[in-house]
Length: 203
Image (cartoon, rainbow, N blue to C red):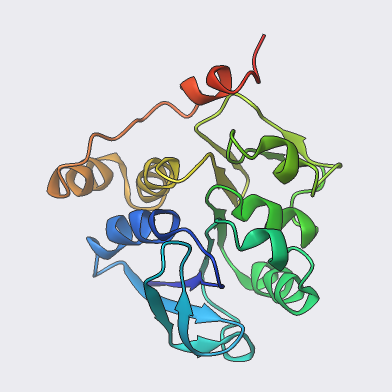
């Protein structure tokens, strides 16, 4: 059983978080999920609905998987040293660190991506990549796995990445069964990224 600490903060993107968590949640014998935040209690998403953070950051060190979503709230949280410091500390004890969308900006500001390959939301590319000038940013990528650091492009890409992570940890057959259970059309190719061209990041 791998424990997932899923970070929430004001203004997080709902699908960034719950797309991946739905996939992990369909493997209940292999993953347990806990929402964590700087302060426990309800945390409002970008769309409005709040999620209940069960643990404050101080009590959320030692999980095997750390999941960091993006969303407009990252614009403020990149300057929250308590949060980025916790991300660095939690990552040091985690088996896997994964971000979705502009969550990669938080990993970058925590110093985790320096010298590593990573990707992020293509629409917010200039801002997000500006948070990590020492990162080897990959423009044309649905998701990138560099060692134990996994980063995905925007929003829905996080669900594809989570299935790839399930395949890495539990096998391709389990990942395929999970996608089928969810009736989800899994994009399996991490390099297939039409949004890079859409936002002028290729050629």
